[in-house]
Image (cartoon, rainbow, N blue to C red; front, top):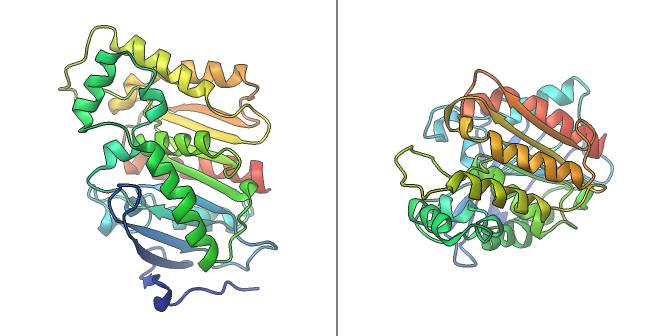
Length: 303
């Protein structure tokens, strides 16, 4: 069965296909929960609809996923090409990709509130000063699961159960994805987290950080990981690069890995923690390893 796709009257407008595969749509989502309006991009693979519908991957910074002309940095993840390539090779089942665009309030939308709450007051104040306010990730998680997901399920041939629902992102978008998983563990089956920004700061290198900030953040990252679901029903891909701001990620990623393994996750079974040498914190690096992450995440849960 081929996918029955929405028309413009449903609020989903067809877009040109940068990778010439599948179908791409955009929907303008009104603001809710005090968050700004934003675009939602939906890519549907050019494959027969699997029995029960397509699994769906909800990615943050959706404007960066498909068309380089929409990306401020000039390089897209090319998620449509990655999925198509893996499906053609038989590595994964066809999956829809929903990209939820970020806004001018990206830092506060994505900032992990539950991790921030575990920081001492001076460290938390430094992050809020750098990012322009308090973390809104709880509101953002609600937007994704209670607004965006039902919208997609209504208009597209999705498989809506948690075993076929995934979240992901890069940098702070990866943190937002983990916050969604933490808040809605019964609706999400896994998370794809590229350059997961557990270190919080620095970003520009000019921030004034209080004494002990690194140790405080590492402890808060461990506490954040302890709030994630125990192993058994979820799969996690969490990586980092070796260069750029990712060079600050080592201690916090190690702390997170230790906690997750203590909670029953097994490396290369339902968890990947990986460092990519020689690359930095940018869309090109994330594009180049997206095949790795998708292959693991989707083979574990839908294969």
